[in-house]
Amino acid sequence: MSYQRTILLGVVGDSAAGKTTISEGIAKILGVERVTVICTDDYHRYNRKQRKELGISALDPSCNYMDIMEQHLDLLRRGHPILKPVYNHETGDFDPPEYIEPKEFIIAEGLLGFHNRALRRHFDVKIYLSPEEELRIRWKIKRDTAKRGYTTEQVKASLEKRTEDSREFIQPQQKHADIIVNFYRPPDQTEETGAHLNVRLLLRPTLPHPDLSELIECGEGDDKGTICSMITREDDWLMETLEIKGDISGQKASEVEELIWKHLVAHSPNLEHFRLGQIGAFLDGTESYKSHPLGLTQLLIAYHMLLAREELNEELREVVRRVRFSD
Image (cartoon, rainbow, N blue to C red):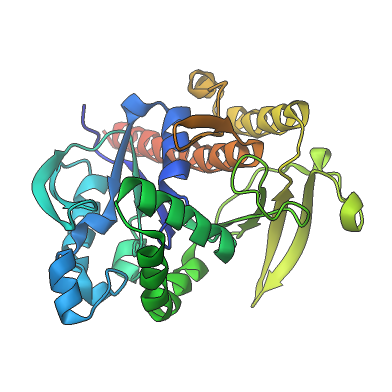
């Protein structure tokens, strides 16, 4: 089924920042039958061998067909199918293109989704993933050695070569995000890489974030509550920073979940069928785990996608009313 106008989420971050994990959880909340997920890293201009010969990394916009990416996002946003390129990370070359038909919601994840204004204008919600750097390195080594056939030394060498490109092309994109997601290790758990990570969410006023103040329990130092909010300033903007600790209880996480949905249903009472009991699940190798901070992050992002859809539907209903009135 195609739609005249889709809701488009952009998930941007450096390699192994957690883009796929975040996107998969959001798709489950919304209903996978309602979501099209694409990877914008498939728009590479050169294969792995050519990049090595040219001395260029995939993080460089000139190594990607940015114009075709922008055209395809425009088509998907307006409900039209595309023939998307497919880059094979295992072989380092291109597979046959894939026919993609847009559904009600689209998630576009990748390295360069917010690189220019032409790309950014297509997104209803923009998310930038900025995990603690040491944590990202561990994630990348684990992923690339297990799934892409690299050695640990090769992954570290690649990271070193990409440092400058990451600083120049990837990291500046976070200033365009509505929400910046920062997973980090608790001070006393330096080996933690999954279920008990803390998360810090920088919520910019470019979106109407739900009021969670009735559940906030800030304290001092190590006694700080498992969910805490503070107001910070960035240039001329006041922003909310929401922190959720990895040891938040299941009961407390459920209370936050209920409050987020309470705010959403207040805007549109017919959204109860989107609810999902199991959020925050992720795989570490073959083992499945659950993270409450991850789940609540996914839920907050899904909240904004559903809210964007309801706002769009209201706009369409208003257009119909005006047309009928004019007749």
